[in-house]
Length: 237
Ligand code: DC
Image: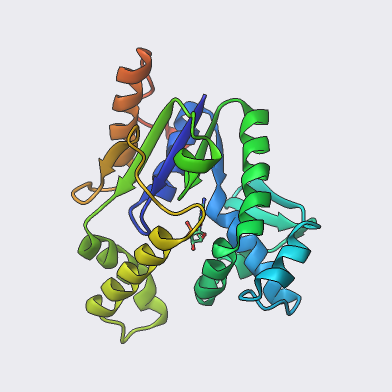
């Protein structure tokens, strides 16, 4: 079964998606990491990410793979691990250029569909999973939280590198990213009518979000799902 998870930035969707996949023993596919991998490749090879034609020419020859490693999911482009560059704090604007590129989206959507179909049971997480990648997914979640709360969560991480950062600045940046994700001509972030809304604003942590998802899964499928992580799953989360 395919589980589609979309949602806003810093809503907690990535951690919840990864832990949900662990609890169900499904493959986890972080589609944002694939867009990040293409951005990292362009940076390393001096390809300007805003040049849609140049990027489109290159992306057709790229093999973008996700591999699970002990410290989490990594992205490989043409067999090179580009995870560090792909997740560097200054890559954001370049990744947004890449995500705006219709040819890149076509190539990556096809790769994501192949990965999901090959696995059979998979949790895919991104912005357009329930709308474009797997519009027929039997289970779709849309994860969101109040923008101030999402900014607060980002500030906890970002302040380590930028000690003068304020909550207002992070909130403004979060709103700007939401707008860019929603305004994208292809693959825009949206809540599909059949997606279950998971509001994480008051959740104490990712396990509360996963429990909410599992409760919905149980009522949708009629099958009981594991409601709390095993010790091994907690250790690897
Ligand atoms: O979830 P993330 O921040 O790692 O995503 C990186 C970028 O890719 C972000 O700009 C949103 C975009 N993205 C997308 O357009 N479609 C997806 N399915 C996943 C991510």
